[in-house]
Length: 307
Image (tube, rainbow, N blue to C red; front, top):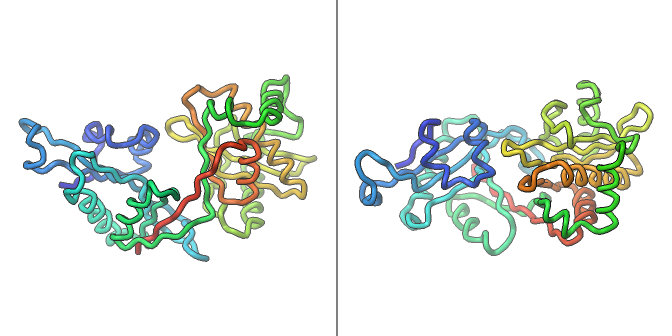
């Protein structure tokens, strides 16, 4: 049986949800469908106890790219069935409920992202059986940990990053985006969006206060913003790099300076368990991330669409 999981029912489903996703569900940012064991499946339970055996997490997102258009879509984030209860149709029941939700929703379709790699091919096969069409995207992701900073950042970049972050003052042309007025911040983000022909940055927020104030920086020459790195703080206090953009002809040098500084700040000031996820939709930002972490391979993403 599939249910919409309410707040007072969430505890039973948390073991089926990755830890880094739980706060988004608890906060209501993401929605949760749960599968409960039928009577025959839950022989080990007693009384009125119901056993959580599957979960599907989704959200409603605006501004998702499909071809050359922007669409409102349901985004599927996580589908999981407890190992003991697989091959019993539970994943199909969860997907059917999501499909029914789409029929009564203004969203145009459902999307899901799956990393490339043979270990994910079965997941792609399952979604294709539901009518999803997949394409390889420009988006690549890289997750950085403290251990990655210790092991993989190149010695030259590590020395520079730590020198910048631990010195008596940051470079004079780097300022926190919180020092920009809200109107100026919005203007710069819009200009960067217009310059990026791929449309990858179109979806990001233009509200300055949506970003982590201690990690989001701009390079300023005179009174003009030249480059910017924007990080979101996730509900579990991990970080997510969503923009590494420039308006400058010397952009690559400035963006590398921004990455070095924020990498050093993260290493020196964040707890050991905190991670940083880079979403690298632009070739320039991918090249810079690989330059800073030369042994860290970005993972390419394939995106599936269901209408």
